[in-house]
Image (tube, rainbow, N blue to C red; front, top):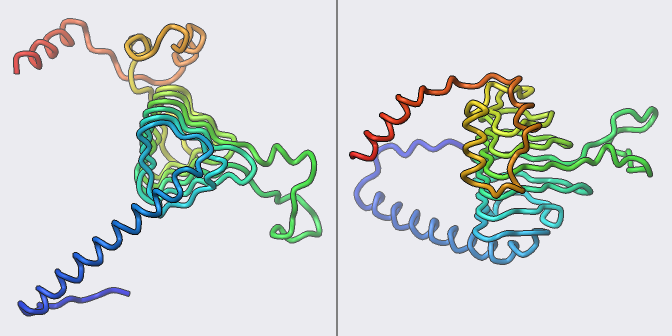
Length: 232
């Protein structure tokens, strides 16, 4: 229902503000209480996890790393599979992640009546999101997808296949637009953030060469920009 507030008088305006303040305060308390009551239900949870208690979660099948923000009103559902989210991950509003699927190939049975049978595990694949990933507003990530470390999922993207590390993807179905940096810069970024045992290896870095990448700035330009920033 839409509301046309018109031009309320001073008393009406004051009362509206008081009621709105009381409503907002009550909503914050309710959300905080719900958050405290449900946060322990996640299967795994690292430190500094921020989540909207009004989102939709199959808590017991969701594993969260450290320093994770699930954004506003997400839908994270995986009845039999797992949703695994790494460290330093952030979501925009209303992201949907759907582990598992429903069979549509059974003849003579309404889809709603199809029950899982032995060997149906291929219809219940999970979702894995690596470290340092940004998932944009209202993106949808479907079963069986692995989102590589450092990737960016564009707003509204429908991700049906796995995403390479440090790739920017967008569209429906989502496709790789480009890498965040040239491969040499990705390797530098990896060295800055991760110990040797956790970095992408040479083979994994070489596999990224096939994707478009921004042109690296000449060293002279990069040094000049760095010097200018340091002088400020």
